[in-house]
Image (cartoon, rainbow, N blue to C red; front, side):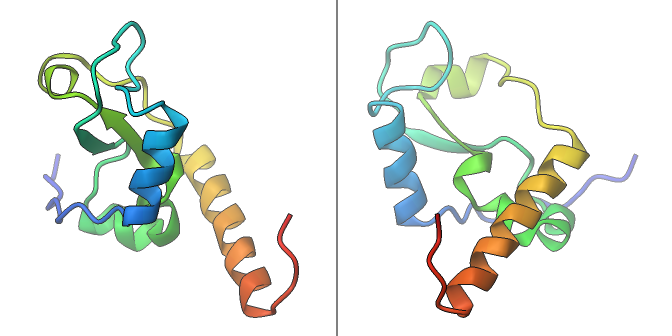
Amino acid sequence: MIKQKKIKPTFSVEVKEAMLAAYGYHCAMPDCSDLAEHFHHIVANTEVNNHNWPLYMQSPFNCYPICSTCHMNKPLPCKPSERLIQLFEEYLRSLVKLKKADLPIG
């Protein structure tokens, strides 16, 4: 197996703030009530994945706010299938097209 090169985390401030608010500023791991301190990529933040799914990789769909303890010690929930990632990517692309066409989203 070829090891993929990881790249610098790049969640925007808006994605981080939205995910913190969605989880009440707490760790997203079940049964944990600690405050979230990290933003984990559910699907690894690699060059290959960013090439294949550029919108999905840095979106809220791939962001998991997590505390330091869980980040170091607990396995994250299962990763989505490649087909599901592709569906998210297609959805995000459609939103970008709507925005560029200045059409209402929603």
